[in-house]
Length: 104
Image 1 (cartoon, helix red, strand yellow):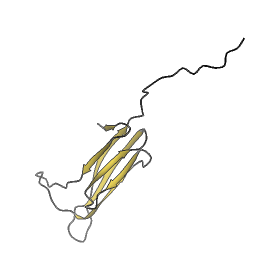
Image 2 (image 1 turned 45 degrees about the horizontal axis):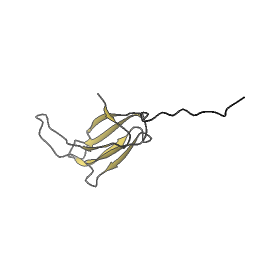
Image 3 (image 1 turned 120 degrees about the horizontal axis):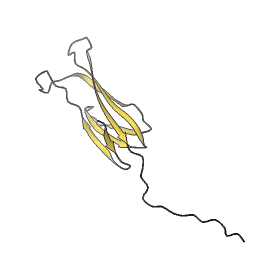
Image 4 (image 1 turned 90 degrees about the horizontal axis):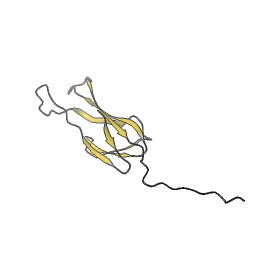
Protein backbone atom coordinates (compact mmCIF):
# COMPACT_ATOMS: atom_id res chain seq x y z
CA UNK A 1 0.00 0.00 0.00
CA UNK A 2 1.27 3.45 -0.89
CA UNK A 3 2.18 5.98 1.75
CA UNK A 4 -0.16 8.98 1.46
CA UNK A 5 1.05 12.57 1.72
CA UNK A 6 -1.09 15.69 1.89
CA UNK A 7 -0.17 19.11 0.59
CA UNK A 8 2.60 20.60 2.74
CA UNK A 9 3.84 17.24 4.04
CA UNK A 10 7.16 15.47 3.58
CA UNK A 11 8.62 12.19 4.77
CA UNK A 12 12.18 11.15 5.65
CA UNK A 13 13.65 7.92 4.32
CA UNK A 14 16.68 5.77 5.13
CA UNK A 15 18.13 2.96 3.06
CA UNK A 16 19.49 -0.11 4.85
CA UNK A 17 20.99 -3.15 3.11
CA UNK A 18 20.31 -6.43 4.90
CA UNK A 19 21.65 -9.97 4.57
CA UNK A 20 19.44 -13.08 4.45
CA UNK A 21 19.20 -13.07 8.26
CA UNK A 22 18.06 -9.43 8.37
CA UNK A 23 21.38 -8.04 9.60
CA UNK A 24 22.73 -4.74 8.17
CA UNK A 25 25.54 -5.16 5.62
CA UNK A 26 27.81 -2.87 3.61
CA UNK A 27 27.19 -2.22 -0.10
CA UNK A 28 29.63 -1.12 -2.78
CA UNK A 29 29.56 2.60 -3.54
CA UNK A 30 26.79 5.12 -3.10
CA UNK A 31 23.16 4.22 -3.85
CA UNK A 32 21.32 5.76 -6.79
CA UNK A 33 18.08 7.21 -5.43
CA UNK A 34 15.38 8.71 -7.67
CA UNK A 35 11.66 9.49 -7.88
CA UNK A 36 9.57 8.36 -10.83
CA UNK A 37 7.67 11.66 -11.14
CA UNK A 38 9.55 14.81 -10.13
CA UNK A 39 6.40 16.88 -10.72
CA UNK A 40 4.71 15.04 -7.81
CA UNK A 41 7.61 14.63 -5.33
CA UNK A 42 10.72 16.68 -4.62
CA UNK A 43 13.70 14.50 -3.68
CA UNK A 44 16.50 15.54 -1.33
CA UNK A 45 19.29 13.04 -0.63
CA UNK A 46 21.60 13.67 2.34
CA UNK A 47 25.38 13.75 1.88
CA UNK A 48 25.65 10.18 3.22
CA UNK A 49 23.74 8.97 0.12
CA UNK A 50 21.64 6.60 2.25
CA UNK A 51 18.98 8.93 3.63
CA UNK A 52 16.95 11.95 2.70
CA UNK A 53 13.48 13.40 2.36
CA UNK A 54 10.71 13.57 -0.23
CA UNK A 55 8.27 16.47 -0.23
CA UNK A 56 4.79 16.81 -1.73
CA UNK A 57 4.75 19.02 -4.84
CA UNK A 58 1.47 18.15 -6.56
CA UNK A 59 -1.30 15.57 -6.49
CA UNK A 60 -0.52 12.22 -8.11
CA UNK A 61 1.50 9.05 -7.61
CA UNK A 62 5.25 8.61 -7.60
CA UNK A 63 7.73 5.96 -6.59
CA UNK A 64 11.07 6.27 -4.80
CA UNK A 65 13.68 3.84 -6.10
CA UNK A 66 17.03 3.08 -4.50
CA UNK A 67 19.61 1.00 -6.37
CA UNK A 68 22.70 -0.45 -4.70
CA UNK A 69 25.59 -2.64 -5.80
CA UNK A 70 25.60 -5.69 -3.52
CA UNK A 71 28.80 -7.14 -5.08
CA UNK A 72 31.73 -5.88 -2.99
CA UNK A 73 34.22 -6.89 -5.69
CA UNK A 74 34.72 -5.70 -9.26
CA UNK A 75 31.39 -7.06 -10.51
CA UNK A 76 27.96 -5.52 -10.13
CA UNK A 77 24.93 -7.17 -8.56
CA UNK A 78 22.19 -4.60 -8.47
CA UNK A 79 19.53 -4.66 -5.77
CA UNK A 80 16.56 -2.29 -5.94
CA UNK A 81 14.22 -1.05 -3.21
CA UNK A 82 10.93 0.65 -4.14
CA UNK A 83 8.42 2.71 -2.16
CA UNK A 84 5.10 3.97 -3.53
CA UNK A 85 3.84 7.39 -2.49
CA UNK A 86 0.44 8.86 -3.29
CA UNK A 87 0.22 12.64 -3.04
CA UNK A 88 -3.40 13.46 -2.35
CA UNK A 89 -4.98 16.32 -4.28
CA UNK A 90 -5.78 19.30 -2.06
CA UNK A 91 -9.24 19.24 -0.50
CA UNK A 92 -11.57 22.21 -0.43
CA UNK A 93 -11.45 24.16 2.83
CA UNK A 94 -14.08 26.75 2.01
CA UNK A 95 -16.81 27.35 -0.54
CA UNK A 96 -18.11 30.60 -2.00
CA UNK A 97 -21.08 31.68 -4.09
CA UNK A 98 -20.08 34.20 -6.71
CA UNK A 99 -23.07 36.30 -7.72
CA UNK A 100 -23.45 37.88 -11.10
CA UNK A 101 -24.71 41.36 -11.94
CA UNK A 102 -28.38 41.95 -11.20
CA UNK A 103 -30.65 42.14 -14.26
CA UNK A 104 -34.05 43.87 -14.65
